[in-house]
Amino acid sequence: MNLRLVVSAAALLLCGCQTLSSWAPSWFPSIPTPSFAWLGFGHSSKPGPMPTLDAKASAHVNWQVPLGGKGGASFAPAVRANVVYAAGPDGTIVSVDPAGGKPNWRVKADKPLTAGVGADQDVVIVGTAKGEVLAFDAAGKALWQAKISSEVAGPPAAAEGKIIVWSLDGKIFALNAADGSQKWVYQRTNPPLTVRRFAGGSISRGGLFTGTPGSVATPKGATELERIADVTSTPVVEEKQVCAAAFQGRVACFEILRGTLLWSRDFSSLAGITLDNRYLYVTDDKGSIHALDKSTGASVWKQDKLAARFPSGPVLVGDYLGVVDGEGYLHLLDRSDGNLVGRVATDGASALSRPIALGDAAVWQSTAGNLISASAR
Image (tube, rainbow, N blue to C red; front, side):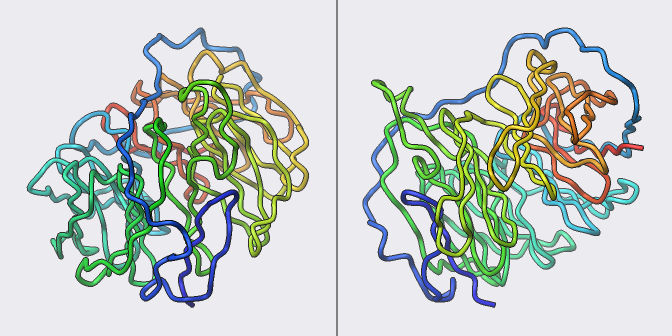
């Protein structure tokens, strides 16, 4: 299968049939990226009171593994069926058995890290503030080091012998997984102001789906701050459609082959989206959690009782929907009506990014520097 690049100009578009290894997307303008400012969005206030719930489900922590250093907005675990990889700012990289949380190995890069982890069955990738891309094999042995134009902006993606890396100056690099040599680079002009929050991309069906500022929502407003419309969550890909969310913009789904807009709704989100067989779930920038009909975008339910507790993006946890709040509680919601039905405390810290589903569990990396797995029962 050939890996193609799906990038965004006015929508998410499928371009060409050339292989990722030999083709650079030349029909997009290659213009030097101007200097621009970045904004970080987070919360400094104490979370609000814990809401009551109708306890119909119980949640439990499966395991917790300490990583190296706290914080790091560009870190997220790489979750595979039989292994979870994670990294910390101090250079620690770990491989964990998801069944019981036992580390398979733990190594330390010889320099601090700012981004990770990307992984496939053969290679584990992390990045530094100086644009260094570091590769390790599945046993933790160092393989190679490459250099891109600026700081590595979030976990890379790996598939089909290629490594996809996003840089802080707005470029996307394709590197050879065997030796780190550059295959191509994609760049476009960035707006003067953008959200310092990594969105990344999804590799599916031979394509890389990734968002750019203005690709899901049209920038609006009189100031650059008002005009921020970055895609702030990894696109979610299904058989016939791909969906994404933008800050100060909308949630939208596109037809996967032609990029035709299927539907859109005005939602501003920093936290991300997920899908099941019926609904698209999104946490908006005010902390409310919504379920939308994924075929039409129609509202199904809204849960705002956690709004003051800074919930993460949603994740499927067995038969339930889960979010992690600003104090590290995993909350379970009924997928049919959004009611709160269970919760469990973890390490007291918020999630760095949207938790990831692994079987019936949710896996996430916390701002306290822990890798956590929790389930519903």
